[in-house]
Image (tube, rainbow, N blue to C red):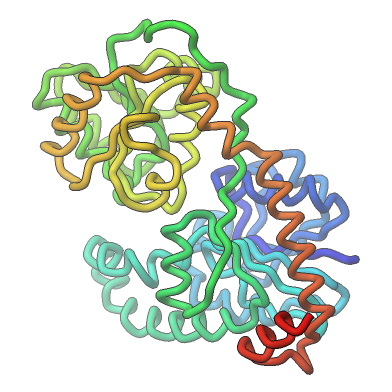
Length: 384
């Protein structure tokens, strides 16, 4: 069985690329197709595979400005020749699923989220965009939405990385999906066996606007409590200016330093709405509870009162109240670790293999050319 994996772009190692690494383990002979590829920015595990790029990679300065070529990506995907492949797995967050597979091939889409800038976060992107971008967005995004919905019909089966993403797939594509949470390398984190050494709370990750790190900084400014902010991104300088005397913005740190902060913080503050959010699970693997906004993937990973505290509004006051509630409770590092193990890499691989096996079997039983409607398939299953 020849396997192709379609990934939107390969210019860094974030959550989507961690999923890709696990798929590379499962299918070591698979070929990878992507719009833009920067070998120095990805892991050796990904580099070991044959990586093919679309014509987007040949456009000027595409490794840096690949997002500017978004309107051309549907055309680029449809020009890929995948006629040799029996199984196609698309990793969707940017345009990836819109390929044209062979008629009898099985196409499975692992959806990190329908493209945010077209759907659930369109108004936020529009509001913060520059004048020229705002002028073009309504027309371009209208075209891209139509293509995005039509290309969803080319997918045989959808996997969602969280229940929140599953709901978006149902809302925007009118398709059902199976939730398989992303792999988290729990084994890389050591669970603390002591009370935190540091008298601080922690914000970590990419410092971008939709993650709302500014809310945590404002809350801890008002409380006069110590907060450490680690990570880089577009908001780093803004947060440094916003930070009061008890808030320290450190920028990017090494993995060992991140482990130290997770092991010694009172709790991780997670004020944004994420599609899934790997960092809260990594915190729990370290024995660190999580104070999170009760939307998106946090609802799949944070159990209120067991592994952390959830708050319902994105505001400094809601975070302050959640910190107060957190400090009235006790959390077990061992229980946090046990909860994190539910999201480990072996679990992900097992669930993916089972899902792919079922999708292939369904395709054999109901080939595309003669596949009955849902109601007819239910009758056949009942008769069997």
